View 1 (tube, rainbow, N blue to C red):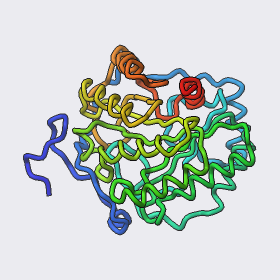
View 2 (tube, helix red, strand yellow; view 1 turned 180 degrees about the horizontal axis):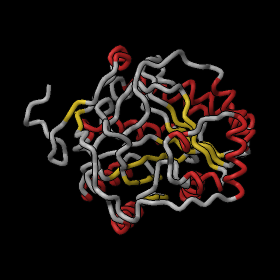
View 3 (cartoon, rainbow, N blue to C red; view 1 turned 90 degrees about the vertical axis):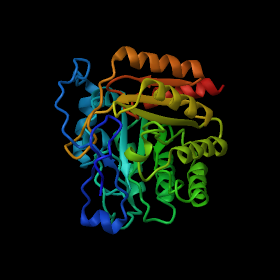
Length: 333
């Protein structure tokens, strides 16, 4: 139970996230966060203009026709119109329940059902049917599986390659348990390496100081080790990518430190976006970062030697994923 001295990064009382019976059975690690509702008026730059072009409308009809579920729709991503216009879509695999709980994430936490081994084939067929140019495949954490879900990600890559050989592929898996068991996590990572994605992503999300409260089932230093191992194992043609969310209690200097740590770990692509509170059960927004400060993050990242950095209030980890992959290829040459 929290004492009165338990306070979060923004000076407010830390409250445990509610835990369901399914989460307890799954051994979910909870974070301690301030869950008071943010009532601040969002600044004018936190908005997007919906532009439904021909490609977006065509893709929407195809998705509805196949009853497909995308991260873009489920997370109400503000960039869905722009990304779908470029025929770039993000899918989530591994089920609807995640075995971990992060203070910012709206994915449901609980005990997952059995692994659907036919899911990769169906995903490959969907990518071909939608005639996609670039696809991002992410997953819920599956700590209930011996390999953490590595086979699933690798098989998704293989199925997409076989049915849509010209489609670019970014994968965004969990750390496969590396934070608790580096040897097992490393072996799982090698399974994905063998499938050869175009981009391998693992999101750091927040700063060293905030990490244990916001991502209690992960570890900051081992996350960097995991990214460095991915860079060591992957061919130079595969870019290594990560994401930072701001507005969760960090300082600008801490963001700069994150960028330095990521670059030292071999990361070449980074996205930085504004945190928005999904519900009353999630971390409260600490601040709204200005577009000017996002520009400063971008300049700093490029000065560190990053190949490409997307930084802005509405940027999400899959934003301009295809363009980022092309930038990384040019940078590697």
